[in-house]
Length: 211
Image 1 (tube, one colour):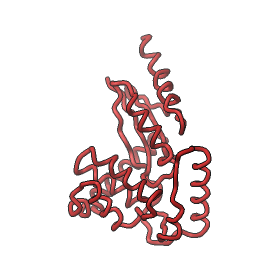
Image 2 (cartoon, helix red, strand yellow):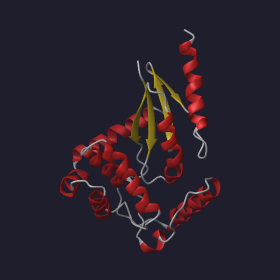
Image 3 (cartoon, rainbow, N blue to C red):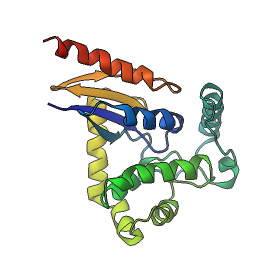
Image 4 (cartoon, rainbow, N blue to C red):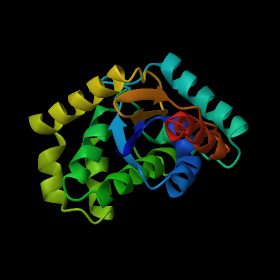
């Protein structure tokens, strides 16, 4: 029976942005019997309320910490003066689901587009207009994407993925959980070295090889 590697994330999670290069390398080196299932964890619910100063400062501090701990990760701090930040990531999560509906290959393309827009281009993925613009840039049918973005069915899918993420005890992002024969095991990871996760997967496979 094949194994499932769950990747629990949020497209507006700055630590997920920092993890992207290593995560990409992990996927390239996974054993053939492991399939990857991304799950959206949903950091922050829908909100039209401007982000308060405490949260703004907290997130900017987090960006600075990431730049120090994960060399090569970049952020455009112009976002904080050029946009009206809101603590709301559900729209971006629904955008990922809406992109997925037009083909699996569009899912990660949308995630990356949201990350680039937010962290590098000072564009706000909490805004529907930004997300629809990104859909067009990704080659999606923008009209179809726009209809799906705030559809109740799309929100239901997000709710299900959040529930599944919590059932996997994935309360922080990113999280990696390996399922083998119905048993779930959280995986270690490092923001600079894919080998930490890959070697963890190898160790977990050893008992089954000796049965």
